[in-house]
Length: 130
Image 1 (cartoon, rainbow, N blue to C red):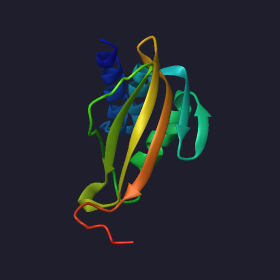
Image 2: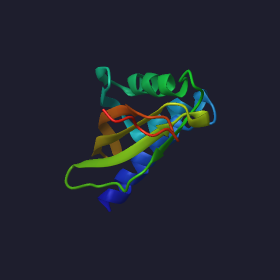
Image 3: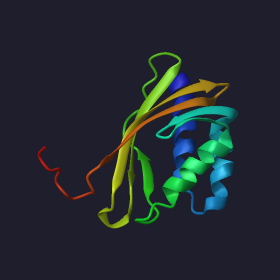
Image 4: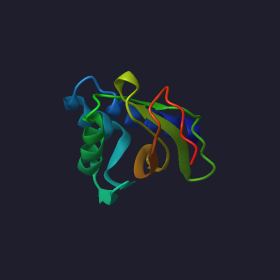
């Protein structure tokens, strides 16, 4: 039951990245997040739906063009926290980001998000040996 609730909140959160228009982002985030959500992102800690909205809108305005965010794993909920993997791909094989998010839920909404993200090679290009 808890995993279903977590999956629903996570999928609604992810849908904000894929909204047909920027004006829908806030509405989607408000359906998934508490108003006092704590967001631990690549640039540090921030609070509130507005802070998460800025992050989502920044990613949506990637120089390579609008991209697509997808959950690419099941939602695993070993305790109070849920985790899942995601991939964000820009058009035409542009740069991609991938990562794992860990979220905490309160009353069926996400009240904390921890993003572990890193850039990976563009689609179709093999990684160079290092």
